[in-house]
Image (cartoon, rainbow, N blue to C red):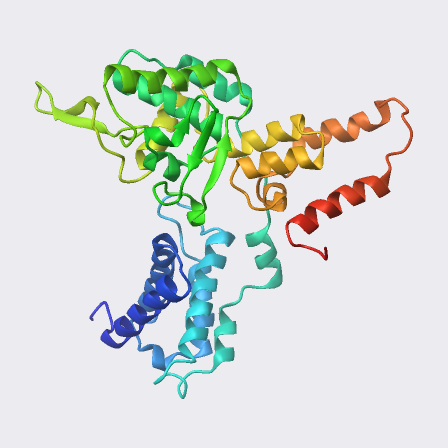
Length: 368
């Protein structure tokens, strides 16, 4: 039995083009959609999409609920079920409007891919993710060796991530000219730096310690003074791979080129945290570390607005909702400490509401 349907392949190509060009979805998102469709087609023995019936969606949901993850050996998570079925629902909604399919499919039939309300709540619930403390990250940096060029780069890379909160994809594409050590800032110019949603913004160094700042400055001085690299050379160059005496590939220093992906950066983080005796935290988790630091240091709405902009967020609500949930440990400290605070009189709710309203208006969430 063939493992594809030529009619399905043609319409899938149109849908993928629609996602990339009309909806402007990333390659990673399109890949997830492709995986969901491949799962569904395999379950229906590659039946033509024109023959789709609600019963097929119901049967697939039942099959998916009983499937076991190859990675964990356990049943697929509710989040995986939700994302897979949501991608299929969106596809069949789109398909029901396309020529040649409108007369065969009903738009409402795509709703049969829905999970129950309870399952949806479980799949979409926000859960507290482990976040490294500032002390843990500083400990990792302090324990990283710096004997070779590659080791110096790795240590400076972790320090730079903490100092700026930059995303790993942006770091992989940065050049020396994007960092201004005098003004202590990073110009994340979307014309050359791979920023999220191609946003251009400036990041000023976060107050995470002069020693962290010094590691980054020394690294840049090394590249400029000893390697004689210029403004357009990579800030964190890729590793040069050579064949050693034992005819095996090994690191042979630095290559005057950018990494093609952020994968090597995540590998550096994994090795650094494990060598320091800590669980692995990916580069992105340090952004949450900085948000929690901001919660401690920011005293006014304007303070937190600036902190939020420094992370590249257009609105402070993004920082609050995506990164700024109070950790359970901090929540416990606050609640237990409320009755121990000195009597300073009630907080003016009116003044606080005015400050919040000003920030919301500035971000376009209310009338001016």
